[in-house]
Amino acid sequence: MKIRKSDRVIQVSDISIGNNLKDLRERSGLKQTDLVKKLQISGIDISVYSYNRIEKGTQNPTVSLLLTLCELYKCDMNSIFGFTK
Image (cartoon, rainbow, N blue to C red; front, side, top):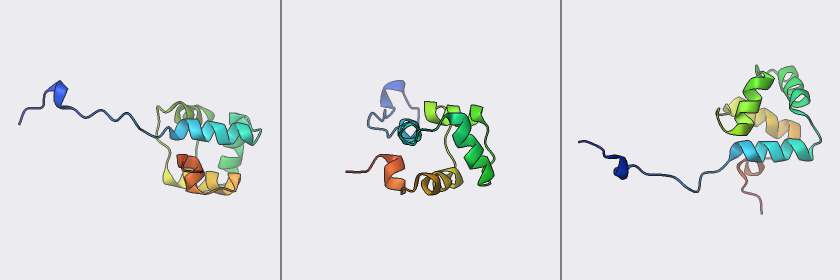
């Protein structure tokens, strides 16, 4: 079956995890470098460059990163995915 460009599904209501992570970080008063240091101390192998790409939405976060961020921010996954009321 040949797929035409017009047959592709475009998702327009995608969740911007990167924007949500940036908001959480900024509300915590942290710079990216400070947050990356905390992540590294917590055992997450990540660079500032990689974290920056996650916030920009050009790199996907790992589950272990998201769980560690929940611990650092004292929040749950709903906050990271933007499902808070």
